[in-house]
Every structure is written in C-alpha cells, then in structure tokens.
Image 1 (cartoon, rainbow, N blue to C red):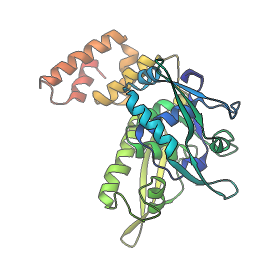
Image 2: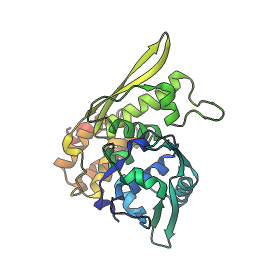
Image 3: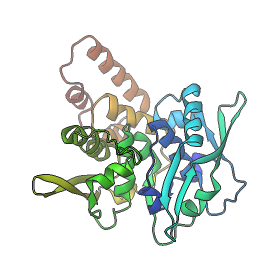
Length: 302
C-alpha cells in the first residue's frame, strides 16, 4: 500500500482518548499505518512503509536505527482503554515489524485486537490529515490535535478534568501516582501553549483553550476548535511530495505562516524558491538578517 492510496487518518474516539505514551517517531509511524488502513483489510494484512517516501513527505530524515527503536517501542508499549462493553483492554500497538533487506521498506502487522476499533468506526470517529499530524514536532501536540479533531464538527470539546488530560497524555503514573510537569506553569508552557501554537501553525484546525477553577485551583479545560479551511480536509496529492516537504521547510525553518507558504508556492517555481531560500540561509548564517521570518516575507513579497 502506498501513502497516495489513503490520505485521511481515521481513529476511533475510544483510542483518541486512550491512555498511552509514544515518542514523536513512534506516533508518526503509527499515523502512517492508520492512513493505509481499509475496512477491506483482514488479519493477514501487512502495511508497507517506504522510508524514503516518508522522508520526502515530511522533510525529515528517518534514520534506520531510530526507526528500528521506534518499531521496537510500538511492539513493547501498551495502550489501555475501555471497549464498547466497558471491558478493560491492554494491547500492544503492533504485532510485527519486518525490514525488507536493502529496500528501505518496513512491513508492519497491526495488533489484531485493535483492528475492530480502528476499522469499525460506527458513528464515532475522528478524521485528521496525515501531513498535519506529521508536521507536529511535539508528541503532546499530536495527541491534542487528535483530541480536538474529534470535536471539529461541534466547535468545542467536552470539558476535561486537568488530571484526566494528564492521564491521557501519560503524565501521571497510575501505579506510583507520580506526576510529570506537576508545576502548572511548566504544563501550560510545554503542553498547552506549545500544542496550540503548533496546531494553529501547521494543521487544518485553529484551537484555543479555556480553563475553569474551583476556588483558586485550576480543575478543568475546554478546547474551542475551528476548521480553518474545509477544502483542506482531504490532502490534494496532485501536489508533489517535494512541494509538501518544501512547504514544511518554509514554515519551520524560515518562520513563515501557512498562508504565506501557500502564496510562495503558488507564485514561484520550485527552483526559484530553492535559490532564494539558499540566499536567505547564507545571509542569515553571516549575521546579516535580524529576523529571518520578516526578511523571508519581504523577499517573497508575502
């Protein structure tokens, strides 16, 4: 299966709100697998990931040693959730990963116990863009993006207890009750504010959050969710992978907004863009530029 055959990732809401912790690369690999899945799949289906294709799509290098560690993590880490009948489920994310010798291709088999929740979407499902999910560098932003995507048709999430959100993000150890990022300012900066910034910059959603207090203690959070462009709900694969990678580079390295990157790509050919970006990079390295974002915007007139 190739990434061009399935461009919308669908995740059952049960899994969206399940408790698990994955690294950024582990999540990226799983998102790619999810985008390949079809209701026609059976227990024997293997999902083939071409590493070079993903590098072109994301603009990031997938080092084979790191990829192997990531698939090892998907084999060993456990996802915990309750099913439709309120049965408590523990399962690994994948059953097997096979690296095809000298081909740069991985064949992955998804854990069979998870397939009913990934394939049988019923009336509750989440759709979100593969490219958007891969563009997010924070693992917390990826999870919150999934969460907010679940509610984009209503424009507002349900009310979550702060402890519940931390539990979903695996910031609270259920056995020891030890909590990571216990300090509120750290949690706000490293999880909430960073996630909002990345989601609003790289994805089809614009979100913000509201907090509720009981006395002086912050106890609950609600996310407001806005779809920024309905036409972007399905990725246009007439755009080449090179163009997608270049857009991500313009946004992340040259500090421009999504709409500015779109204008640059619409108004210039790729060789011209690459030459101008190279010139900007040289000037920035020589200390000739105070703000790379402002300077880049002036060069491209966006």
